[in-house]
Amino acid sequence: MHRETNFIVVGAGISGLAVALHLQEAGADFLLVDPKPGQGASNVAAGMLAPASEVNYDEDLMGELLRRSAKYWEIFSAKVESLSLGDTGYEKRPTMLVATERGDLDELVRLQHYHQHLNIESHLLSRREAREAEPTLTPKTIGGLYTPNDFQVDNRVVIDSLLRLFDSKQRIVRSLVSSVSSRRDGGWTLALEEESPLKCKTVILCNPMYAPEELLPSTLDARLLRFITTRPVKGDILRLKDALDQGPRLCIRSIRNGRWNYIVPRQSREVVVGATQEEISQRGSIAAKAGGVLDLLFDAVYSVPMLRELSLVEVGTGLRPGTYDNYPLVGELTPGLFIHSGHYRHGFLLAPVTAAALVSSLTDHKTYEDSSFLHHFTSILSPYRYTF
Image (tube, rainbow, N blue to C red; front, side):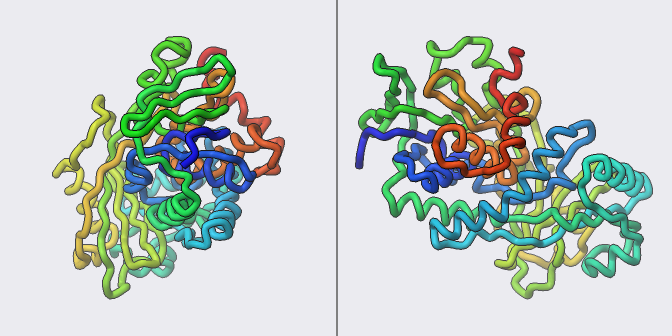
């Protein structure tokens, strides 16, 4: 394997793999470096591509970014299938937000008003309309909010297709990066724990759980390092098996007493239920808590009673990479050193379009043609936005 290349992408979750795919499309010479490709947060995600049901109030810019990202996913899925000859698990399966209490229905009405403000399509449904659209809903349902453009992707299917593509081209180095150092010629050297060093012209950091301050203690400004260091936000997620294919046909996002959960059916007859959210201080392997699993199962079964008959096949835990303001970090840290990280709860939705924007700025190949979009979000996603 070549030990010198133009680009090195550190981290092979959806963030790094999306960057690598666009580099591949651009014909660039690159390597991916990760000790366990695809086994971080990307392995335990639900893969919801849901700008309507995932946007928070007073996040107008994020809402616009989510909406544009969702539109890009069909293009990205086609790129993956064309280059990898594999499936992506991308499904245009709509989502319904469901309420069983009056206060929670009021929240859906409020959210629908915010969708109108953001130009995101959604439709309020009565009790009868909600249960006709999704017959597996509990009779206690009192209303719903239908979001026809909130789709999903099977996270493990698309990750597997991308990993097989880059393995076939010998683009993956399975090792942990211990340091990144600049060279006098303007390039970079990456020291690896289990391999000989790698050299490149450009480094793109996409591994959020290994913070830049751990890799570059003497290279970057201390204040910048503090602001771009991602924080781990723990999430528990469940996978059920619908062997008889009797589960919901829509993605369900239910709210009960102000607590949200989601139920995501797959073509593979898997049903994903998630997810808890817990700010933690550690970065190591964190086990799921019994209380979190109980809450997920109780809320899911309360909304869709037939789920109690399904097999529980997996309890997973992942660490979402959160930033200071929960916006991604996309841009140049110092000449030749870039970051593409911090996508928080929106990794699968946002990573393809932010990767396209980044690679478009680094190569002659324009992977994303909407120049107004790129210009508009450059300062918003810049790692230097904190210092403006």
